[in-house]
Length: 300
Image (tube, rainbow, N blue to C red):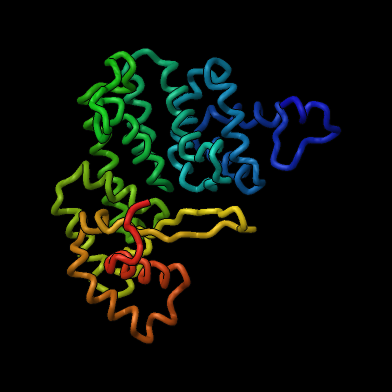
C-alpha cells in the first residue's frame, strides 16, 4: 500500500479502507454480502478485495459474521474472474480457499467448523467448483489424493473423518444436480469437477453421464474441448509467446475409450461440420488426432 498512500487518488481497481469496512459490515447477512461481492465484481474490484480481505480474517471480522461470509463466498465464488496469470500470481480460487481456512480456524471445535461448511454447501446455488475445491482441500488434509501419504495432524484438520465423508456426499449430490440440469458440461472447471466426482461416487454413475454426453457429435466436441490445454513458450528472437496446444489422452481414456471415439473424431475432422465449429473446438479435434497419431506429446 506504500505507493498508493502517496497518490492523490486511488489507482483503478483499488479500494479504500472505508470501502472494505463497509463491505465487510454487510457480512452479518449472507445474501447482502453476496450482493456486495457481485457489485465489486462489476466494478472490477473483486480480486483486489479478496487480497485485502486477508488483513481482516484473523480478528477484525466478528465471529458471528463468519458463517454468512463463508456461505456467500461458497455461493458466488465461481462467478469471479480468474485474474492475471503469472509466476507470482495467486489464482482466485486459491484466494477464496485461504479465506475459508483463515476464518474457519477461528473456531477450535471441528464440529462447529463442519456445521459452517455444511450449511454453506447446502445453501450454495450459483457455484459448484468453489464447493468441490474446498472439500478436495479438506480431503488432502486427511492424506487423500496426494503424492505423499502424510495427512495433517488431527488438530490441524478442518473436520474429522466422519464429517469429511458427509461433506463429500453433499458435494457429490451437488455435482449430480448440475449434471442433471445439463450445466456441468458447460462449467469452465468441468474436468477438475469430473475427476473429483469420480473419487466420491460410484464409477457407473460417472460412466453413464459421460456416455450420455458424447452420444451426440456436439456433446463429443464439447467434451473433448474441455480437455484442451495450452502452454506458452518464448524464444530469444520471438516478440510474442508461442501457444502450444496439448491434450492428455490418458485423462480422457479414464472416462471413455479413446480408441472407441477416435473414428468419430476423424470423421468429424474431415466433415463439412468441422468448418462451422468455433476455433477452440477445431483446435481440440486437431490436437486430439495429432496426439493420438504421435505428432505431439499428450502431457505438458
